[in-house]
Length: 250
Length: 250
DNA sequence: CTTGTAGAGACGTCTAGATGACTTAGGTCA
DNA sequence: TGACCTAAGTCATCTAGACGTCTCTACAAG
Figure 1 (tube, each protein chain N blue to C red):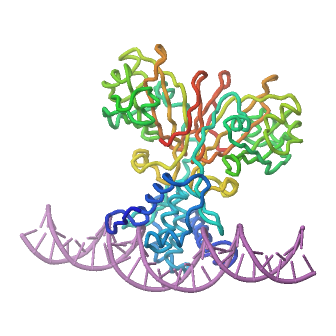
Figure 2: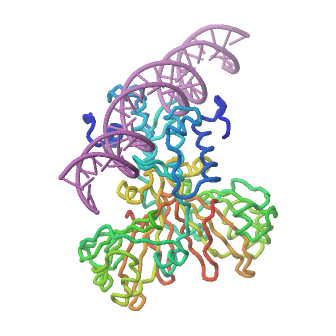
Figure 3: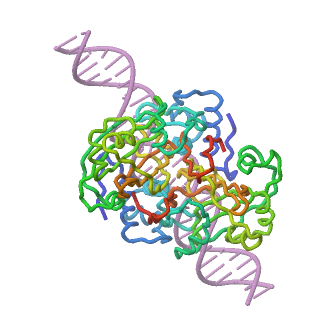
């Protein structure tokens, strides 16, 4: 264990945070539980408040996650999410050997407004199906998405209950959607989205607004607003012929 | 002042944070100084630690900024959306020439390491030219970029002094670079980047890692890491035939 | 007029202790 | 067997106090 140096210009908590980073990197795996706070405080010879200040830092960095009543867990590192014509999140993730999971959080019939109406090319107030889904790798959530659907895609999505939305639309109605445009921004998450993603509200999300059109008819039938955990996802925009990369730390 | 309710399921610090948000919104302006921590703690009848926990929240939201030895200051609001009209990738804006301004901050000859070497397809330690540039619309900075160049592009960039890098490479050496892949992440900015962008360190930046290859020869000759102000920039990824949108608030 | 220093005021860090809330495991009881 | 309950373990919050570091101002010294 590195020696802590007081009055060195570097706060004790910062030194502890660095020591913990190294330790996690060297000898811990995803979803491992860290030692309890009192134990770590004793090991470093500091007050529990000081130790918590160090762990606060790791939480803010997205390296670990606190779970009330259970402990502090090491989080998985990022993965690359490609943006291109095909937007089959579930199938792509499954192909990379991970266990993609899509959960339907909410379904509602609403009237299209503003940006939704404009992007779907429908009138203000026109009926639109809204789905809210949570996407994750096993138990680790990566993204929450609001889907706004119209036309045949909306009709087909009424029987959607979870899993791959792409597959459901294809099997239920023979519809294939292609990504037409993506707008990417970043921001700090809304409380409800931070909760669903089980992430700190201080860590930014990537916000991707995607317009998807039916391949056969060319009509825009889905507008999706996804919030990706910025610390776990890299979006990849690749030209054909160049493979998307593996996640990299820098 | 709102009454604080203990044991209500909402932490005291959260209630104080909300009270401060309202107060800032109603009666404070940009760059106003907040009352000092001991004074606020006394006003709310809580310990200074609890008060600080509340202010931590506002700092994380980018609403205020602490200055050691001076106080806590209210930050500018309001220019979050709809600032940049053209939000395509940097070279497109620079190529359009309009109000885009590119300033050369730094130039250095370095040895390629890790991700830089891998993406440029050169050996570890191979000589690479590194440029650091600041891009802005008039006086308003919106991105800071690290360029890593090799081959003919590096040779041509040795005489670059500012302005459009794309144009310089074309006019000095007849080189045209095409974007091959972009990796997009988000994070909180490094202190040096926040300084250059004149933004708070609590607001996220969009980090775009771009691999650019020479159109004529197909060789990768530039790797660029750009940090865009997340609150001023939307990235657009569009299929041919669909025009990029104007920035939208939702 | 310039320089230097002391002090006040502000945020930053650390310690110490107490209590509350949540989760899990294991035992009790029907 | 199954439901319930209790206890232990863990993170969350709050209080109290002390000292460090940084910035600015005022005033004294040169």
